[in-house]
Image (tube, rainbow, N blue to C red):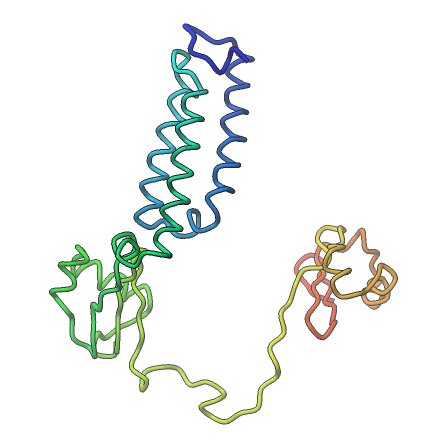
Amino acid sequence: MDFLKSQHSLTSLEWILRGIVGFIFLLLAAKLMGQRSISQLRFLDFIIALTLGNIIAHPLSDAELGLKGSVITTLVLILLYIASTWLSLKWSLFKRYLDPPPLNLITNGQIQFSNLSKARISIEFLFSELRKEKVDDIQKVSLAIWEPGGTISIFMDTQFQPLTPADMKLATQPFTLIKPIIVEGKIDMSLLKEMDKDYTWLEKKIAPSNMEIRDVVLATIDDNENVQVYSNSNPN
């Protein structure tokens, strides 16, 4: 385990071992911190990501820095991150510090310039975000909110919102979720088991396509047990 310690130089094998240990450790660390740190880079997440990146990167590129100290420091930071996340759920004042309340940037077509200053964003950036949402007239915006995660939620005035079948009182089919059950000839056995079906049942379902399961590029199934088989780019 000498490759974990500080040395004047490392052999090629020791560098490889350091890289493997660092990679596996970061995978475990990310899993321990949870999905939020990946999906939403908020204030606390940004601090942790910035710090962990520097702590782990240095011993992976400098032989004179030991890896053991970086691992211990990272574990401490992960524990502090988890504790801070838990504390933000229990202590509202701390939660407001980490995740401040959203700010109204536009209300009934009027820009709230004071909140633009609080959010530290420019008018040009605001209009850029409006363009991304295909908003051609700010007067059509009923509400635009600056979220703590750094995104803008935009709500159009009701008269400019697209019509839905409910507005027109049209009957619709129930929603069904389509899932891939065969990908490149491999069956999702967990999905098949979840539906209380077996291999023979699936074979019968794809039989009309005149294809063997091993030759199926993609097959999907919905909540009504309808199977759609795709050959190249064309469904069968």
